Image (cartoon, rainbow, N blue to C red; front, side, top):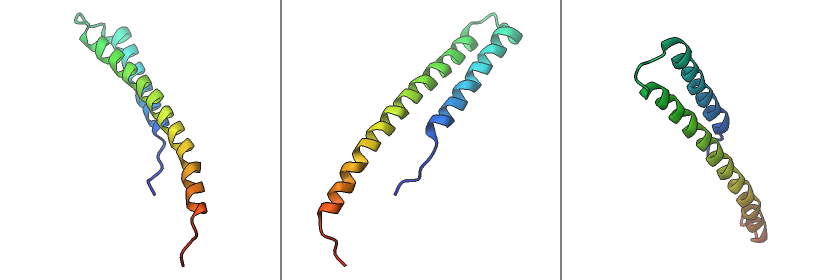
Length: 79
């Protein structure tokens, strides 16, 4: 049985850290080069994509679990 983890929470924390980094870059550092800003924006975007991906994956796994349980119950158990 696979180890259960809290992937959504982990990704949300990472995305929040990228958002904080973006605020720091915009308000404190104010770089002449826009690359740090775009790195933070890319981190936020990938984090949001990750959350959507993980939620869809978890929904698919929840749908497949009852089907697997029913298949196990239909077969007789061997001692």
